[in-house]
Length: 213
Image (cartoon, rainbow, N blue to C red; front, top):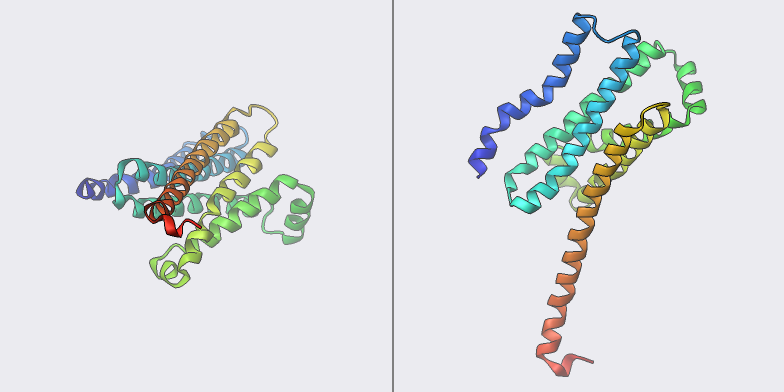
């Protein structure tokens, strides 16, 4: 099974780069519509959120299939989500605000949905810089707790997406549903492990009645 997973690496790398290559072709063909900057923002934000959901889906998939070799894929998808989020942010800073920091500050203060986008990006940045194995080893148990904030990043990104839309809300609602399902799965696994732990702890007491009190 691990050999099969390893053979999927080239396909996965191409899949991660494909949205960017397609965007460059769309720009070259001048097919981004009447507002190309807005179209580019939405496109990059969408793909960041999609790769974030794929990253979150790896753990449930690994739990159900026992494909332990998928951990590296989770890191790759997470870094890809951060990459597209960075392009999304750079597009806002350069194309929308022309790197005029006072205007950027005013825009952030006046646009509440930007707070959630900024929160999501800061979390993704923190997770990206601590994703190398050396950081994981140095942080120990803290690393796992820290990387659970990816759920908060996904929720903040969905609110950021939801809040700025004025029309069709189907897509952010779809992402919200996906996130709820993934969090629900993690919750069920946590409950199962908790019950298993309580049962395992009760067995020695049942086997030795003198210790029951």
